[in-house]
Amino acid sequence: MLEHEYSGHVMETGAAPLAGTGWVERRSASRTPVIKSAKLLLGDSYNQSVINCLVLDEAANGVLVDLGTMFVLPEEMVLQMASGPSYRVRRCWSAGSKFGLEFIGGPLVSKEAGAQMAALGRALWTQAIPFVIADLRSQRFFGHEDLRQAAEEAAYRNLEKVLVRG
Image 1 (spheres, helix red, strand yellow):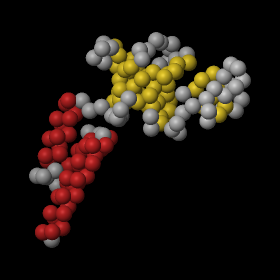
Image 2 (tube, rainbow, N blue to C red; image 1 turned 60 degrees about the vertical axis):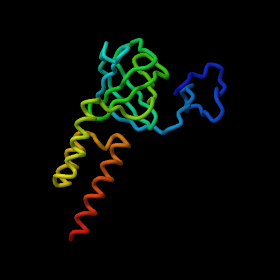
Image 3 (cartoon, helix red, strand yellow; image 1 turned 135 degrees about the horizontal axis):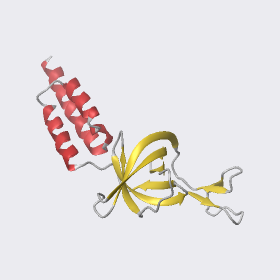
Image 4 (cartoon, rainbow, N blue to C red; image 1 turned 180 degrees about the vertical axis):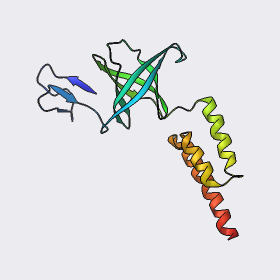
C-alpha cells in the first residue's frame, strides 16, 4: 500500500520512497500492470450494490482498481473479475477514484460453479480427457487451487489406466 510521506521520513522499516513522488512503497508482492473489467459487490450478502470498475494492476495479494469517480467503499466487499475468479477483498487505501484492495483468502467458487465443476469432474471418468479438460478450463476450474489439484489427480489416474491397458 502507498502512504504519503509528509514528514520526509520513511514511515516503516524496509519501506523505500518512490523516486520523486513523496510516496512510500509498502507492498510485499510485486505488481503487474493490467487493464481488466470487474465489478465490486457490496452489502451484507454482497448483493445490495454492484459497481463497475477497472483493475489497473494485480499482485498475488491484491489489486488496484479505478472506479472512474470518487466513491466511499465499505471495508470489505467482493471483487468479481469479468474473466476470472471472484475474491473477498478488504479496502486498504484510496486516492480519488482509485482503491487498493487486498484479497481475503483464495478465489471464491459460487454454488452453481461448484456443482458445475463437480459434474465436469465426474465426466472425467466417462469421457475423453482432452474434451473434459477444455470444458474445465472454460469454467475456470483450474483457477481454484484445490479444484485444480483434484482435476490433475483425476486426469493422472485416467492416464495411468490407459497406459496400463496399452
